[in-house]
Image 1 (cartoon, rainbow, N blue to C red):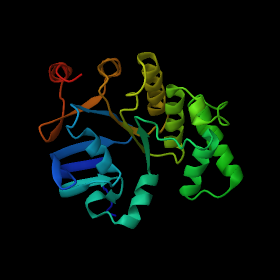
Image 2 (cartoon, one colour; image 1 turned 60 degrees about the vertical axis):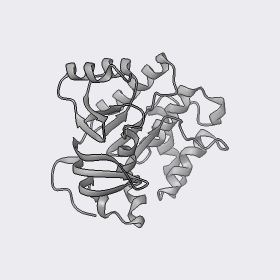
Image 3 (cartoon, rainbow, N blue to C red; image 1 turned 135 degrees about the vertical axis):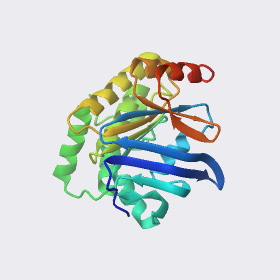
Length: 242
């Protein structure tokens, strides 16, 4: 672990990111501050998800600087990875809920796995995050009894459990219809805009959401990922793949 003395909660500088030995993103420079909302966009296979995976310590970074908070991803030891991941909330396109247990037990499982022991504290935290996503009456339900939007709300609640400073959202609306996708986006924005809200890094292909909720944007293409400077550039670059 190496202390990040800057203000950036995510700091990549000239980083080369590999997946299964293959270079996927070259010379990535990305600075994200506390509380920012940032999109990562690009065609399928352009490396968007690989960047997210690098942030959870799941890919190889061979050169440059790569810091998440005080964790140095290039020097991260296996025993440090669980501690890194406790600082992050991750939301997946396919929800990744445990289908054999209730909503409450899905969330309790995560809390116990990250060191929570007191039953009353666990129950109170679960109630708090379910209220935050409008699902406080669904704790007893099984995932298969919920709609896709409801399952994603539970996944967002799970991401909030340990009050992360960073939420990584990998295509969180990808499996949802347009109206439900908008509801999920409004929820993410409300979480982002609250006092001391987390930084959110979101991978998306959804052009309508991207246009309705503008934010800093990084475009992945041709082994690179660079910030889009102006909205007009975004229109040009997105036209072929969204």
